[in-house]
Image (cartoon, rainbow, N blue to C red):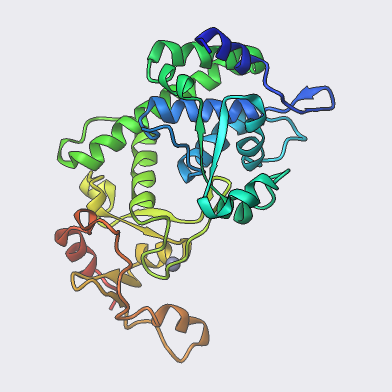
Amino acid sequence: MNLDGYLKKFTKLRTGVSRGQVKPHKPVMLLAILSLIENKKITSNRIDYSPYLLELFKRLFDIVKSEQDALNPLLPFFYLRGDGFFHHRPFSEEAQSYKALSDPGSIKKFTRIVEYAYLDEELWAYLQDQGALNTLRDGLILSYFPKYKAQIEGIVKEEKEISGYETVLKSEPDKIKETKSTYRSTAFARIIREIYDYRCAACGLRLNLNGLVIIDAAHLIPFSESQDDDPRNGIALCKNHHWAMDKFLIVPGADNLWHVSSELDDRIEGCKEIITLNNRKILLPQDEKYYPKSESLAWRYTRILR
Ligand SMILES: [Zn+2]
């Protein structure tokens, strides 16, 4: 199929209609995928049902949704298969279960059966060209969301900036450039959550659903003091442990263990939960090059509440 053929398909998606309004889910999913390809978050013809995709889907969806539209990215990720260019790759042992699927079911069930989605090879090849990608994106925006053109283009531009900053932070953290603070903190948060695999480095809590992530990215030496967004000056924590670290009730040590302030009283039932963290291993990133820097750990350690 040529580019024009795909443009027609993109602008005539088989979307549902509710109360006279076209459901925005499918075009939003495609807009999110185009951005991830443009920003090299998707680098081969393999589209994972990833936190990056879900977070971006949510950002775009929040702009265009109407009152009756529920946030459910799994629906378009499933039903786009009916539009002739978007396909699923089931795990080899699940091929039969996939054939039997008439709806996606739960996220748990779907991701057990489907490994990833992919596009027509020809479409994938077109999307490597910025001009073709822009043509398809413009087609989506003008067909479905002309009212929100400026806002969507604003997000697309922001995503580009954030991704650019993420690349610098990951590969050359010493060369941190001046960036708008909102981009800066989003990029830092995304990287930290990703390298810690969306898991709290203290308790292991890990929960992300439809682009909602429970894990925060915390600076070891606060940014206000260090201006240091190097991922090795960061750690992923759940809300409770983030708060406790901010208050120096818990600190990660250079011995790769957690240390708990002796001010916490183990006779108080409610304190035990935090005290049991003492001397437990920090749940570090898989990639050693992102382990926390010793000077960042030392900064925390000397400030533990005594
Ligand atoms: Zn935690």
